[in-house]
Every structure is written in structure tokens, then in C-alpha cells.
Length: 453
Image 1 (cartoon, rainbow, N blue to C red):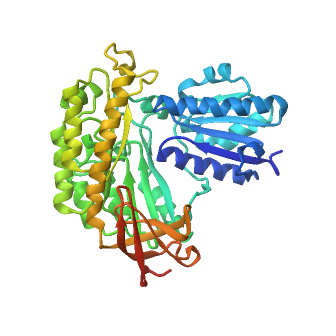
Image 2: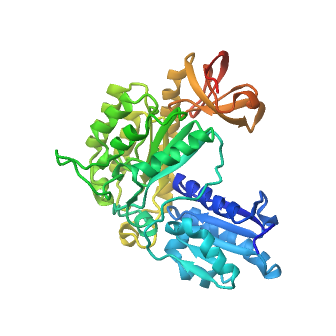
Image 3: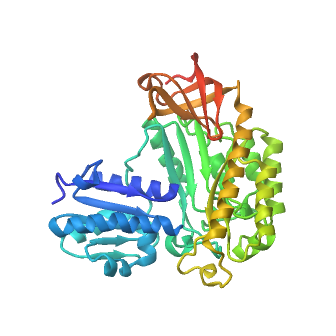
């Protein structure tokens, strides 16, 4: 029944969602469906959704509305909403868009095949109940042939007052170190060169796995995992995200310093530079602790790239408190910062508070923060001028087909002239000739292809 049917997946949101989409695409490939670039030519449309910001959610509804209209004239069209909006809205989605065939939360990504079979048998299905996540045996349809995501922990046990993630992604569930290493070995055998270990709160890795050591320390931590997977032959680079300052340890920083394959790039959201706001957010750390983490990283790895997330105009945030965020950003000098104005999310405590700020204040603070971010990122970029950087080539520059693009160990996007056919998956020494706030251009030293595969 699925033979020769075509599918299209549109992904909104975070790296976890991208990884989930790759796994779901792998399941559809296995079922005999064929990937279709144009959503209007596909028979199975899957929206993998994000609910962390209201505008992402509204975009889903507008896309869905157009496909629902199409379904009225083409009853064979199968419409699926997966991910966080699906988990949050559940059956309400069916009431809002009755043309939907399947609503499935992120914990059910590995069950897509079974759920789709129920749909093809004539059922309208909602799968949002909490389940123990099945170990990942599907073969994802990876978007890249050079870099790959590997999930290490699903869910989140934190209760930040603004965040809907724990409600929609469920409790923390760690994969075993052996399963993670086996997936990395398989990726290496397929020619992948870089792996990003993923978790909504990756520093929580292993807390739910059994076992403790004689010194009372837990047997499985992210640090232990890095040591355990570091020597997988063929994998040249390892990254991890997303970190939580509450659980970020000195031992982890030491491991990143010691292990040559672990890239000097840390994504550690701080959300606010003000302690009172952090307390209202229930983040569990102070801005002083955050600064100590960054200081320690830079003490051991002065050149490390630091990226983060920040929220402005959280309920009750005063001008002075916002200026503490600006001060933190000015002092630290992030390589990259994902910024957002606070957006009330259903089912979160902060959404019900009466001290919400106006849209005008949100816009003003976001613009001011973004201007500062760009200035500081441009300053940080200057350190690359004239330097030799190791760039792992991933793809062609979409704006200039004569150039290839890849990333430095510090995750800085870098462009240079070259033939993708020759260089894809190789690490090239590139002399940086042009620096911008968020990307670089350089000249390759092709006699210095550092990893000739």
C-alpha cells in the first residue's frame, strides 16, 4: 500500500527535532516510500513541530492549513503532525484540523511505521501517551554524509518556569554507552567524520542508568561517555549539545581539554544575566557560577568558542535586570548567541503570571541585545584573521558554487574555493583571509589536506 508513495518532511525547531526527522525519514524509506523535495507533490506530509516559541507554532498551522485544503480534493493525502506541538495539543489538533491522520509526540518517533500502518488501515491516530523510548534500531536518512547527530538522552527533568519541553518530551531517558558507541562505529563505517552527541539537557546523561562507583559518584556521566566513545576509529571530531550550567562540571571541561577529538566549542545557554530573573526562571544557578564555568573553559582552552541562548523581557524583568544581561554578553563575548523575546507557552507557570511585559518592550530589548551580540561576535571573529584553521568540508556554498564550505573545530562556518567532489569529508588547512561576525573565508593549502581519506 505504501509502494511508490512519496513523502516530504518539514522540520521546525532544535537539533533534537532534526535528529528525530532523520530517524522518521529512515523509517519511511524502509517502508518503501520515496523522498520528495516538493511538499505539493508528496502523498505523505509530515510536519515535525516545535512549540518553544509561539511564532514557530503559528507557522505550523499556516503550512498545515494549505495542506488540509489540498486534502479536501485529494483524499489519498496522508497528513501527520509529529513533535512538540503534537504532544502539547494532542486531540485538540484533530478538532482544529480534522483532515489530520496522525498526531504523534516526540517519544513516538521510532513507532512511526506501526502508527502509519494503523492510519493506512483507516484509523485516525493520536499517540501522545508517555512511553519508554524504544532503543533506536532504525537507520536514519541522514541529511549529511559527513556529520551526524547521535541521541544520547531523551527528555528533560528540569522545570524551568518558561519552558514547555519537559511537558512535551517527557522524562529523561538515557541510552546505554554501548548502544551509543555501536551507532558511532556504524557511522564511521559509512564514512561519517563528525558526530554531535545530543540531549535536551545533555549534562544529565546517565543519571537514570543503574550503577554507582565506590567514591559515590554515578557510574555513567557525560564525561565518562566522552572517554568511552572517544577512540571510535574513523570519527575525527566529537561535539555535544545542549549543556545546562547547573550540571556543567570541571571534570567535563578537563575531559574536553584532554581528548583531542572533542571540539573546543561549548553551547551553554545562560538565558539571563540577572540572578533574580534566573531564580524566577528556576534555572538553578547564578550569573557568577555561569561566569566561573566560562573562565575555567578559557583558562584551559583560551581559543574555545562559546555559544549560548538568551531570553529577554521575561515576566517582571526590569530595565536594570535586562542591563545585567547586556553586561554579561559584553563581558564574555560570545561567538554566537541565539536570542529570543519571552513568549508565554501553554502549561508553563510563567505564562500565568500577571507581570508580562509589552510587545514594544520585548522588541526594543531584543533589538538592543542583537546589536550587541553582532558587535561582540565580530570582535571575537578577529582572532581568526590570518590564522590557519582546520576545516572539515561538508558541502558546496549555496551562494557561490565555486566554493565549498565547512566548519572549524570552533564551529565557525568557513568558505573557500575548491571542488566538493575531491574535498567532501576531508579536513583542509585553510588560511583565513576574511572575517565576518558569524563566518569566515579563506584560501586552502591543498598540500595540507589533513585527513586524506
